[in-house]
Image (cartoon, rainbow, N blue to C red; front, side, top):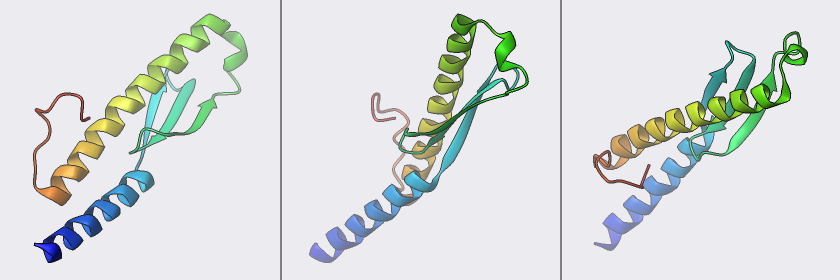
Length: 99
């Protein structure tokens, strides 16, 4: 039992690192706004197309940023769920609120 617990803890630590290293990108405005996020749903970067950003009203830019963030978050959660399933063998897709 203790040997299994040690193995499980090691797998969970590996999983945490994998999620930290995993990156996804949310894009809005046909590439004008981008949000890069990791598998732990931490924002790593926000980028704007410098050639087009000045032509967009601030409120529209804010909407694009929110759209890019939401897209990145959905993708990040899906990829994290895949990693958890791969490592644990448990399908957590039907458990609301986990991912």
